[in-house]
Image 1 (cartoon, rainbow, N blue to C red):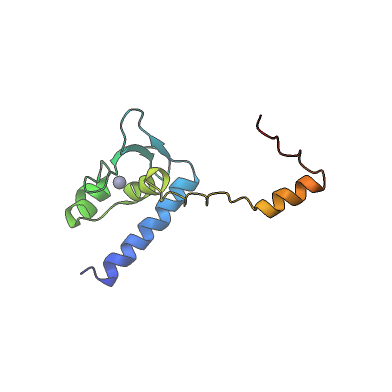
Image 2 (cartoon, helix red, strand yellow; image 1 turned 90 degrees about the vertical axis):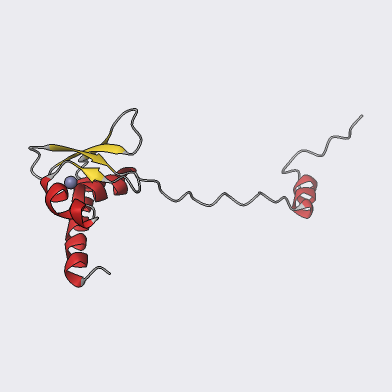
Length: 119
Ligand SMILES: [Zn+2]
């Protein structure tokens, strides 16, 4: 089980990841789903990130020296997931239902054309 120190470290990384996303620091890699290039906080470096679930990797020192060996994400992986990861699909719109009484009323009032009678 992860302990409080680990969770606190992840929370701090998530805050920084959200900041990177807000700054537009996450770029998709054309032709490579699950990969991103993420700029570091001061804009001096770019890190190659793989954020596909189960294959997470980052070229930053934090991931190489700490997070990766612990099986945890760095802020760049979190940022890539936030910016480019699969998002839950919105629910499909409910099928439109037509109230036949409303249609007939609209026809009687001249709001819509009378029904054409098939020949
Ligand atoms: Zn990283």
